[in-house]
Length: 178
Image (tube, rainbow, N blue to C red; front, side, top):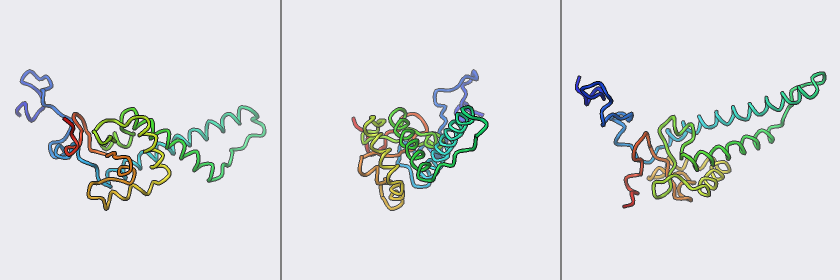
């Protein structure tokens, strides 16, 4: 086996051209992600939000139990409260993720990144506005299916892109600035 195929130099050390990106996927690096990848990443993110809201519910229940164990019963929040709590957690999660690393957990798992029109991580203001759009108008992601540029409504409005970024340079090929 040659050093190019094994990823190791002749001395058994990692070679300079070793990459985690599979050879067949390298052509997609920096390209805008399609609907399926984005929906799968969103599903992972929704599970993370549901777990966070569930943990918050258990924390509140624990406090109520510790306050008065003799009369304890699990609280029964209505659906409106749960949707509001979930929306607030989702908004904070998306804003923080996009403003810091450009990736949510779902994006990280699927090799995606949210970038601005210059291929950079979003500023805090852009991340907050994009998160608000995605929480208030989640169906806007379906526009990716009919958009020739694989852009959601939030992407079009804010000039952002969700790109494949498994590592290294992930600036969209058509949007590189020199």
